Amino acid sequence: MGMTDVSHRIRNSGLLAWSMKNFAKAHVWAYQHTGGLVGSRLLWLPSALITTTGRRSGRPRVTATLCLRDGERVVLPASFGGRDHDPAWYLNIESDPRVHVQYGSNKMAMVARDATAAERNEYWPRLTRMYPPYRGYREAADRVIPLVICEPA
Image (cartoon, rainbow, N blue to C red; front, side, top):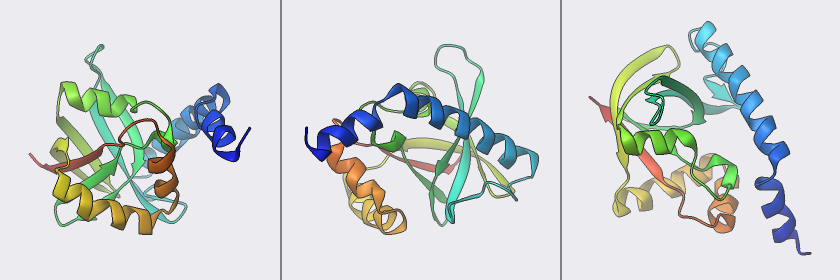
């Protein structure tokens, strides 16, 4: 079994999913309860909280993710650690693009949409410089990893 096969199995394993879910819960809790003082940087990288509306439940769903700021825009890669399916928050956005984004202590009502081809060409290199594992995620994933652009509502 080649290294690519091993890393593919690890990225899509139940243990990784469980670990990511529990780390994410702790990250969101710390971010919310400190007004962004803890959690707005993840491994020295900028992160944001995105609140979507659950596509089945209709309830607010809060997720922490790495992000890139570009003026008033917040760019979110829906990488899900390179897994073979899109994260739930992205599926929620497909159902209802109205979101709330917290970046540090700043909370913003925004509208999310998929990046255009030109925006993907602009933002992916910047995101990959910021967090080099994105390159491997994009190469290994059995899907096109969406880039979400959030703009003020």
